Image (tube, rainbow, N blue to C red):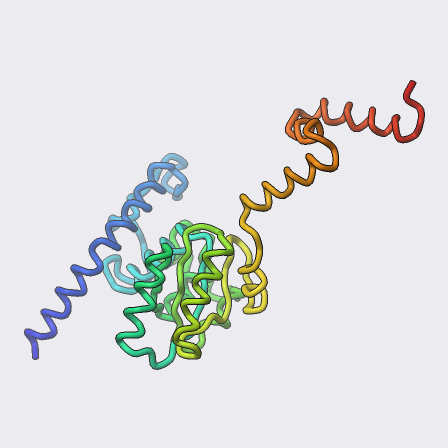
Length: 250
């Protein structure tokens, strides 16, 4: 029994090692940018991987690791889909994860209580910090109501409606066993209806192309060039156009 537990823990450590390494890279990047200063001085940037961190839970505990991991996922993905899962079989789970991986997405089952702690301090440099956790203890985050029952998140690196549409198609294969209950798209919180509307939108690149084409049709290529010019040039051009419309142009 004991050997089985030890073996399981070793496997868990091996599986989590690349994730922890990835988080450490993000933290080191944060440190090098000197955005995390403390009362020890404006230029003091503590190593967030060392004992200088005064975390609410022990630094190397699973709870602190999960808080760091949730922050890493939210900081490195522009879209987070929140889903509820119910009685998914092992084969279904494997297929869903493989299909999501093919389109650059990932499924993570979350610990609701710990994720809630992260949400309350999502805009903080270190959500695991003891003082930060205490300060934000009563913060009500708009996504918190979604953390009810077995919950998972699907992370999408870039804000692309087509990817969201592809994810929803994948989830249809298991119907009510895994379904979206809300989302965070960049800085905005979406409900299910808004997610369904978002998935049908064109991409940013398509919108930019359509806008450029529309402006070219309405005002010629010169209008597009004018909009790309400096403020003074744009003002003079608009004033000239105003004179032409009023009949004051000689």
